[in-house]
Image (cartoon, rainbow, N blue to C red; front, side):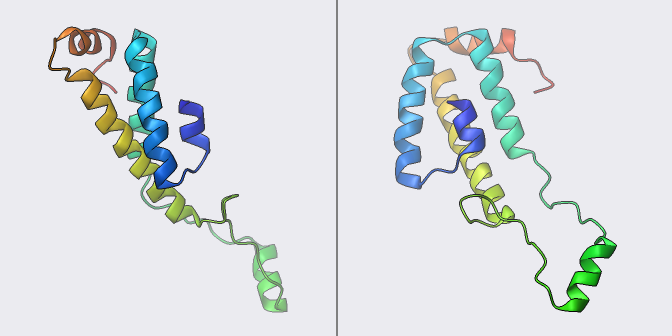
Length: 124
């Protein structure tokens, strides 16, 4: 399910149901590997570079522009621009973080937060 969150784009209505199912699945099998994977996903989605590196245009692209030929502009398979897609990934990261907090801060006990403290390092 994490691979789907990393690679796919979801509509808001579908995403809330997806995260509810994901939360119930995680709560039944909260292992150290799951805790680490979720932490890494959240870190990955929230701390990407905010602006893509600007590359110097290639000489061939400059020549194509002079000739009036359209130069390829990157878009995602869903048709969104890279900036919109990055904002969506950040929003998904925040939603997963909220779900993670709900799982760890369980009012019935401290077992989950203690397991988290043992398994997830400070680097993450």
